[in-house]
Length: 409
Ligand code: GLC
Image (cartoon, rainbow, N blue to C red; front, side, top):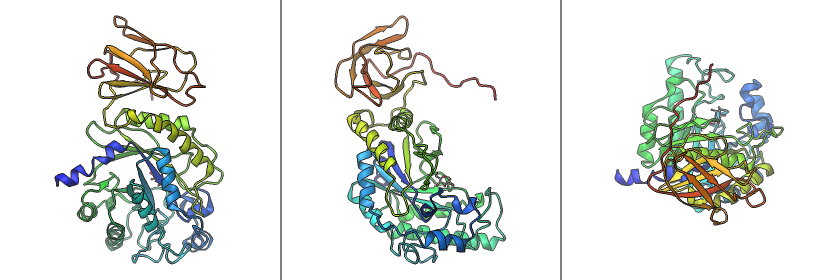
């Protein structure tokens, strides 16, 4: 038991992971909900998209190299999304990558590549299956719709448990199980998670299939869990999870760092999504953004270890993260070379620009509660985010905490 628990500590230390949404919907290039949103009958979906999903340039080692370059520590792949198509060799359904499209098991080389690089392996699994005969309604626009009969429900639950059993027994050690929702609430079965736990005792399970689970997740928003609870925010890099050919709304590398620092600030993880094309290659824009942010992360590795929560709320110019007796002032809006931070109660002993190691002149007016940082790096020295490490006396403390913000709704 002690060993199993120790095995889970990687999660909170990881801070950054890659989410991969990949399946036949990439052929359509209109996001992973295309079947439901366009009311595409299963037969048509199979003919147009599943059959043309060839994965001809699929190289999971290349995905993993990108994750490493990006500074990520774990990778989570959609083993089966809501369209029911299984990327693995399953005996539970004919709707899989062995029978159609690629005609091979796509999951095994992925699992091998992730492990070979020393990263943690995560499987996403959707509780919905729009192609299963017992599933309530493929084209539902909400998931409250009930089962046709208790037998339909029981059969479906037996089916998804059989799938989970395969995933948990055929691919060696799995570090994380990422359940999705968008399925009727009464599917949540403690028995499923208990079975998963029995098969993979160290596994981290998210909170979308009821109890027992190990971490909380928020989607497209960064919402810290209560202190002591491991948590993760999953976010897209444009506005879609699955590949969308006309979605050009890419976040910048600076935005990625902003999200990463925001999660780090409250001791959480960022699970950032990539949506490979149908051939298995990751869009060039995605690669460039992740690499640019990754180069920064590698130069700032000292700010990541640990799970310390920052006592500082917000100010207009910087995000304050903490680690032990160090406060990191992270800011993107460089503008003038001087800034004032008015949140810190502790005496500041030294200030250093992490990117270059250069000492930063500072003046602290303890009676005013203001810290002036001078000769800050400009854009030419630090194009993305500048980080100033402040060594302080004692545990970092804020002058005033803010619990809420009054906004009429
Ligand atoms: C939503 C969507 C799904 C996506 C998931 C990721 O639940 O249904 O397409 O996989 O979010 O968090």
